[in-house]
Amino acid sequence: MTDPRQELVQRLFRRTGATYDVMVKVGTFGCDPVWKKKILARVPSDSRRVLDLACGTGIVTLAIARRFPQGRVIGVDITEEYLDIAREKAERGKVANAEFVHRRAEEAFFDEPFDCITASYLPKYADLKTLAQNMKRLLKENGVLVMHDFTYPSNRFVASLWEFYFKLLRTVGSRMYPNWRTIFHELPEVVRNTTWLPDLIALLRESGFTHITVERLIVGSAAIVTARNVRSTDRGPGESRRN
Image 1 (cartoon, rainbow, N blue to C red):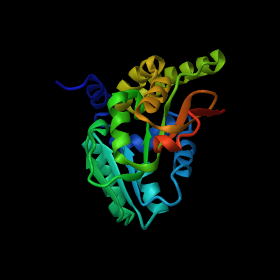
Image 2: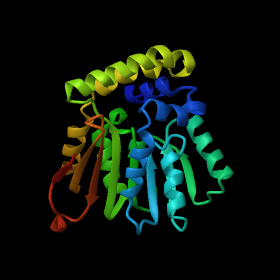
Image 3: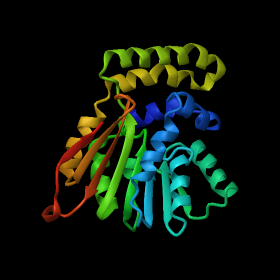
Image 4: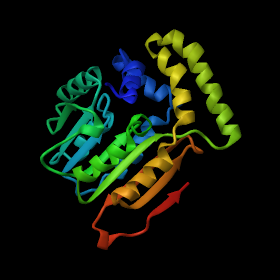
């Protein structure tokens, strides 16, 4: 039986690949490029193997590959349409050190471990317990994990602006981009109900990750979590926050 999370992703993102790069900027009020730069900045400078989970059209994957031309970057996603676009981008941009694999993040398996794992917009759709355990297996000792996703604003005023913007997307945006109608209508409820941030932190600790940090973005509308896969004898602080 297909996991309902996987069915949700397939329903939301069907036939949206051609406009994804535009809509991810529109849907985040222009914040997505800034958030992705923050993800890129957290990839260790000595990384040689990087895994980008839920890579979509390869925005982060290709940025990492360009930053580390001597390294190897693998993007994983469950949407073939998005992977085809990512491969076309890599070929067009002559990015030879990036590879794209059709696989679910929780089930990704590779023979060699990675220096860093990144993921953007994945946690709210994932089986976090299985994902945390798999990332632990996939990372080298001292490897770094960087995960990013939406969070529902706790500030009432900000939340009201957030709700208004999605109402605007449901009306105006759905007319301009009809393939995104399902996302505009269903994504707000997904974000309101997700508890990915505290759940992920707890599961990372349970799986043995340390040096966990959380950076809240745009007054609580998103967050970036970083963690390190270290030996138990080297464990440092459990969690810190940056606002």
